[in-house]
Length: 303
Image 1 (tube, rainbow, N blue to C red):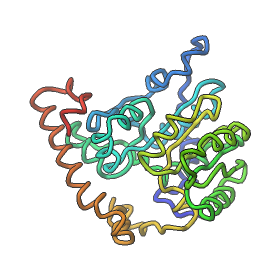
Image 2 (image 1 turned 120 degrees about the horizontal axis):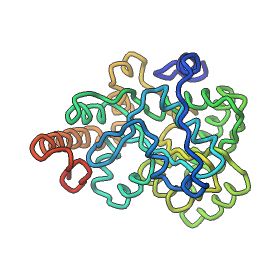
Image 3 (image 1 turned 45 degrees about the vertical axis):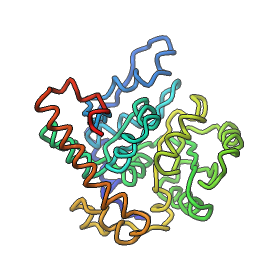
Image 4 (image 1 turned 120 degrees about the vertical axis):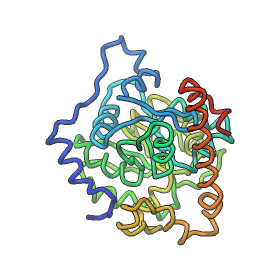
C-alpha cells in the first residue's frame, strides 16, 4: 500500500460495508436547520467531555459512516477537528480557539484523550480516530467520486501528498488549493480559488490552532460540504516526515518517535505539555468525583 497506516484502511472499509454500518440521516426540517452545527452534533451517538470540550464517541465504523454521510448532504456544512493532548492544552489558554472548537465536530486523537476519558468515564474512547489514519480510511470509504481540495504544507510536499492521495483513491479528484505558507493578506485569493474549484471536501493542514481559526474566519457553507483540519497529514502522506514503526503505534507511543526525530520543535509539546495535560485531566476527574458531572462543561475549572 502507498501509505502504511496504523489501521489497514482497506480492511476497515470492507468490514464496515459488510456489516452495513448505520449511516446517520436527518429528518426533513425544511433546509435551514442543516446549516447549524448543533443539528449535526445531535446526531452523534454519544459525547464525552475532555477538559470541558465535547468529543464525539464513535467506533471506527460509526465515524466512517457518519462523516461520509455529512459529505453527501445536499445542504449545510460539517467541520471536523481532532482533539489531542496538545491542542487541548492550547484551547485552555486560548478562549477564541476553544469557542471555535465548540462549534465543530471533534474526534478523539491519541492516547492522551483516552487517558482523560478513562479518568472521568472509566473507559477509553471506542476508537483512536487520529487524522493521520482516519482521513485515508475515509477517502477509501467514500466510494462516490468527490472533488477534494488541499491547503497546507510546503509546495513540493503538498504536491506529493496530492499525487499519493490520487494513487490511494483514484476515483477522487485531488486539487491543490494552496500551500500552507501564504500570508494572511492573501487569504482572500485563496478563498477565491476555493470558490472557483467547486469542492466537495476541503482538507486544511495549517497546524493548530491556525487551521481551525482560518477555517472559522474564511470558509463558508458553499465552499465545501465537508471540511477537515488535518494538521501535519500532508507531511506524512508526502513522505516529508516518517511515521513511527508499526509496533510503536500499536503501543500508542508514536508521540515518542516524533519527539526523537524532531526534538527542537516538539520538546515543549511533549515534555512539558503531556504532564500538563495529565494534571488537568486528573483535576477534571477529581472535580467530577466531588461535584458531579454537571461541571464537565466548564473549561475555566480545568486550567
